[in-house]
Image 1 (spheres, rainbow, N blue to C red):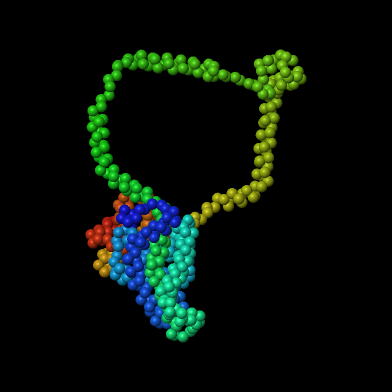
Image 2: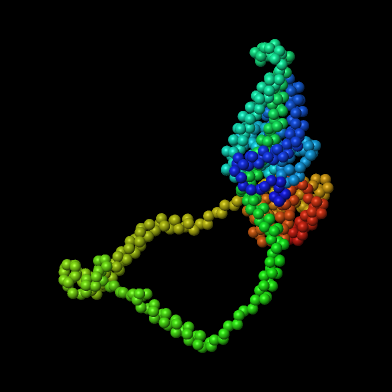
Length: 509
């Protein structure tokens, strides 16, 4: 999946703006979407109608229940058209049976009535996640878009019903007046004979034709919501901006460096008058002494030492030793003078020592009193706690990563599979890479990690050769998984050769 090949502008949008983008995508490929949908669904609808002619309501219910299986076809077309690889109607219809392999039973049973069905479908079909990994992925994606996805399904349901009733009303308007007078609508509605079943089947056909128009739009809106959520989470827009800046600056930077170098070469430093070293040092020393003398005098420095008790900021008259000429009473002034005497200072020091001794003695008494309890507590705290070993994930991206499931010669096996089963060959190389990263490099990979997060873990290993191979293999894997594009023949052989260089020479040891 290369963002630079996207046929739409990649940027964060609101939920309703993202759904509007889905409508535009469906309109841009309306012929392909509607044609492929009609070629797949209308024959199945006809078959259900013929087999269940006596039960028109049941045939319509079955056709409606199979919509999640039909929705996979327009999603496949939109996912390829997004990156400029538009399939033909024939190719899309022929590829549709392959899309039914993954999680079809779950889509038609307990997930069938989910209101977020259109938003969740890309996670199942494009990412191939299932089980706990799918739940974690949906927990992240549905944080801010669950409401919009449910509203999309609710509005779509009402729109289907409205269009269905509108088609039936339009059909009624085209009935000739004389024929309409001869009909007994009550008798036709309550009739159970086979001669009157065609009216119900005609209504069912109108619903099938409505889905040809509406259902691709519904799938496109859910797909655009999914793309918008991934754009916000993975900052696709910033990645595209940085790539664009790099492309623009790649041709200008060398020219700018050349111009700056020529300009600097022509600039010469101005000649400065020679100054005796001794005079410069002398002037600097004298200036420093003058500054220090200024800083030692007021108003920059006002030293004052206070060694007695006083109330607030007393005036100079109060600070004098003369009794009775201040604002304080004579007895209070005498008490303050006694407190400032040397005898009282010795008493204060003794009280201070006594208080500290009492505090230390109380702590020692507490320690002695509860020594048994503290000994037990300390012994327990010294026991090392067992470290929780995080289980290594058995699967990533739906791929089994067990060492026992991989062949000994992964590169050789992949070379044998390229000609007949290229998807299995590329999947084997990617499985082998993830397995080595888990079991030999001990990378903390999780079930919910994306391909980009796996590359971030590889980048922290600081092994350029391993990072380059992982980036190249991941790019081909994404092209095949999301865009169904196989790597060229030269790239296939190069991947196998790089695998042998990396993992057969023992660089990871």
